[in-house]
Length: 386
Image 1 (cartoon, one colour):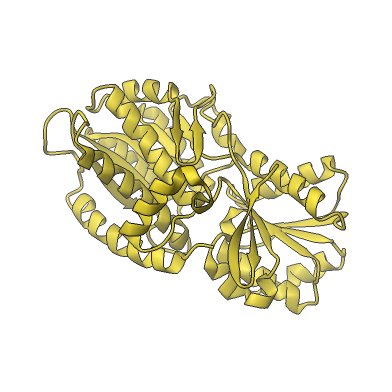
Image 2: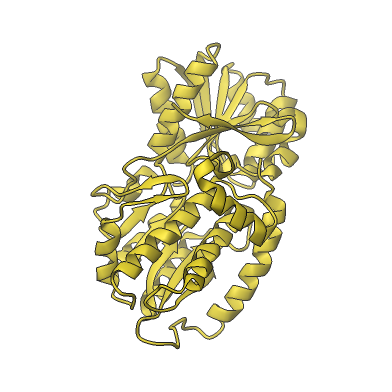
C-alpha cells in the first residue's frame, strides 16, 4: 500500500535540516516584513512513532512550499518543525515554546491524542490555533476550546465504520475481544469499538490492556484467546500490534484481526510476518489519496518531491496545512492569532480528501473513514466504510 520506510528516510533528512534552521536559535520569529508568520509543527521526529509521522511532516512542508512559491500570499510563511518525542510533557513544552514566539501564528500539533490532550490548555491559554491531522480521541473536542480543530474523523466515526464493515463483510464474527495500550490514543478507541460492537449485537468476550513496547504479549494473549473470540480488535501502534499479531498466530489463533490506523505501516507486516499479517484489516481516518481521482495533483507533487506515494495521513496533513494557509491569507497575513482562529472557524473548502468545514466543536462536518487490508504482503485500500 504505502512505502513508509523510504518516506521515513526522506523525511528524516528533511526534518533534520528544518530543525537545524528553526530550533537552534530558539526563536522562529520571521525576519521579513510584518505580514510574515511562522507555523509550528510538533510531531514525533524521533522514536517509534517517527515513521508514521514522517509522511505527515513531508505533506505539511509541501503545502507551505507550494503556497510560498505561488506568489499570492500577503507575506512569507515559515515552518518550524519540532520533535515532540511522543511525550505528553514534551508536547506541552513545545506548545509553550510556540506560544512564547510572537512570530508563530498557529500550531499543527500533535500526531497522537495523548500528546494533543496535554498541549491543548497551553495553546488555548495563548489564543493560538491548534489544528491536528490525525489525533482522533473524541474528548479533544468536548473541552470547549474554541481554538482547536481537526481535519480527521473521530474515534467514534472510525469505530462505527469498522463495525459496519465487519458485520457486512464478516458474518461469521459473533464474538470480539479488544486489546489496547492503555493510553489516550488507544484505550478510547478500544472502548468505542466495544460499545459499537455491542450495539451491533456482537458479544464482547474480553477487553485487555497491555504495556507498550514490552515485547512479549503471550501472557495477556493466552487469557484472551481462552475466550475464543472470532475477531480481535487491536488498538496499539504498529510495532506492538505486529508482535501481538505474530504471537497470537503462534499461539494458534486463526480468527479475524482488525485494528485502528496505528497499524498502518509496512513495518507492521514485517514485524508480524507476511503469513500472520495476511487478511488483517484496519479503519483509516481518511481515504487513500492514490485511489481518489480528485487527489491526483497532490499525489503527483508528493511523489515527485519524496519518491514515494502519500498515504491518508499525508493527505490529511496536506489539507490541514492548507486550512491554515487559506485562513491566514484571508486575514491578510501577519500574526494576529485571534483573527486566525475566527477565520478557520469559517473554513469552507474542498481539500484533496474532500469537503472541509467545521462544526461548533472544531470537528469535521463530513468525516471520512476508509478500510485497508493486508493482501499478499502489502496494505491495499479496500474502500470507504459505509
